[in-house]
Amino acid sequence: MDCRKDESEEQIVQLIGSCQRRLFLYLLGLLCSRDLVEDVLQETNAVLWRKRSEYVPGTNFFAWACSVAFYEACKARKKRRRKVPVFSDVFLQGVMPELAAAADAADPMLAALQDCVRRLSQGDRELLERRYDDGATVRIVAANVGRSTDSVYKSLSRIHRDLFDCITQQLKEDERP
Image 1 (cartoon, rainbow, N blue to C red):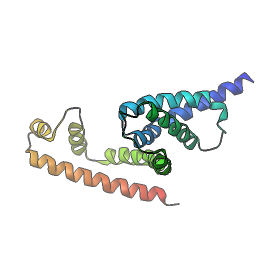
Image 2 (image 1 turned 60 degrees about the horizontal axis):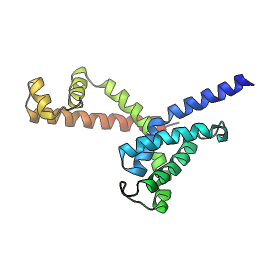
Image 3 (image 1 turned 180 degrees about the vertical axis):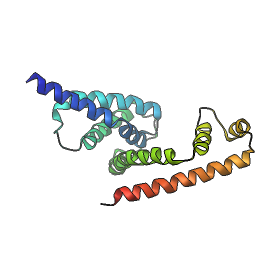
Image 4 (image 1 turned 60 degrees about the vertical axis):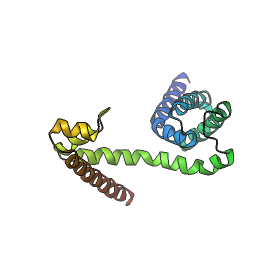
């Protein structure tokens, strides 16, 4: 009996871990404050763990986690009403399904982005990495690579367009049966 309990607890830990990024995005849509989202996500994780026996294996864990996160977000909003943009609970209930769907869709998009970035030429990847280093600006990148700012802007624009096209194509291909 203890072995089954250990297996189910391990499964819950894996399920909670696997949806952290999506829950974060979902909560960010509800709360609009990164700091508050981090606090609410931690509380959501604690509630998910405490209520783990209520989860029905084989059902949509993310949907269940979103419902828990929604109530935790509402509680946090009430506690910090002055610090958080105030939306009515009715409004939040209305957007909840859309936010959950958007957060759920983030994983395939991220996977497509990672794949498309790998497909870029080494030079394009390096330029992109330099641009998104902490504190980097186009001006700094241009100086570091010995190119004009305008040239770097044009290259980054082309890279972004190529990535967008690649991601769009990959997501379309993933939708096909």
